[in-house]
Amino acid sequence: MLEAIGLFVLGLVLLALGGDSIVKGASGLAQRFGASPFVAGLALVAFGTSLPELAVNLQAVVRGEQSLALGNAVGSNIVNFGLTLGIAAFAAPLLVRWRSLAPLLLVLILGTAAVIALGLDGVLSRAEGVGMVVVFFAVVAYAMARTRREAPELQDAIAAFARTRTDLGLNLLRFAIAAVLLYFGSKFVVGAAPRLGASLGLTPLLTGLLPVAIGTALPEAAAAIAAARRGQGDIVVGHVIGSSLFNLLIVVGGMAAWNAVALPASFVRFELPAAIAFALMLYPMLRGDLRVSKGEGAVLLIALLAWIGFELAMLYR
Image (cartoon, rainbow, N blue to C red; front, side, top):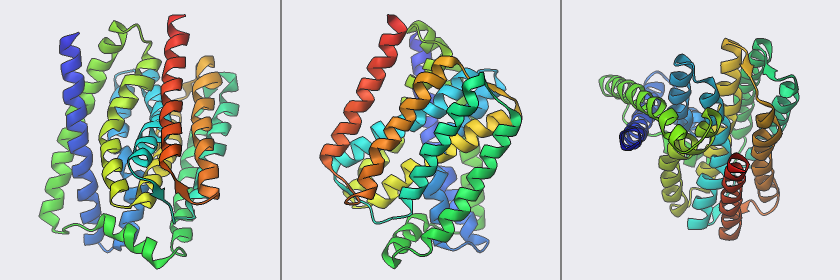
C-alpha cells in the first residue's frame, strides 16, 4: 500500500513537470515556425493542460486498463469544474470577458448528452469515436475564428500566455524532457492506481474517476489559483472548458476510434449526467454577469464534495 502511494505521488509530480515542459516547448516551437503568439496561446489554453491526462490514458489503454482511462477522462471533466474552477473562483472572483466560451460550453453539454445517447446500447463504436474527433477539430476552428473578433485586450492576454523563448534547441530539449517525464509519470500512476484503488475497495472505473482524476488535476488547480489572483479569469475558464472538450471528444472519442469502448450502464446513468450537471452550473454564470464569484466557486466545491460522497455511498452501500 505505501509503495503504491509513493509511486502514485511520484507519478503525479513527474506528470506536472512534464506537462509544464511540453506546454512551453509546444508554444516555443509553434512560434518558431510561424504561428502567432495569439494562435499558440489559444491552442494552449484550449487543451495544453490536458496533456498529462492524455499521457495517463494512453498508458492505461496500452496496459488494457480501459475502464480506468474512461473514468479518468470523464472524472477529469467533473473535477475541472468542481475543483479547478471552484477553488480558483473561491480564491479570487473570476471576471470573464471571453464571450466565445459560452457557445463552447454549450457544445460540451450537448456533446456529453450525445455520448449518453450513443452509450445507451452499452458501447461507443469506432464510427462514433471518429465523429467525436472530427467535431473537436471543427470546434477548435470555430473557436479560433470567433476569438479573433473578441476585444483586443483579451487577444493580448491570450497571446501573452503563450510567450516564451523560441530557440529551436531549447524547445526540442523541452520536448525531450517532457516525453521522458510524461512517460514515466503516466507509467507510475497507471501502475500504482489499480493497487491503490483495490486497497480502498474501488473498481477500476472509480479509481479513474476519483484518485486519478483528482490527483492529475491538483497541479492545474494550483495554477488556476495563481491565475485567478493575477486577474486572468478568461484563462482559467478557458482552460476548464477547453480541457473538458479535449477529454470528451479527443480522449474518449479517440479511444473509441481506436477500438470500440464499452460503456457501463452505471457510467451512462450517473457519471456522464454528473459531468453535464457541473457544466450546466457554469452556463448561467457566463450568460449573466460574466463573472464567477467567490460564492459561486464555493457552490462548485460543495457540489464536488457531494458528488464524491454520492460515488462512495453507491460503492459501499
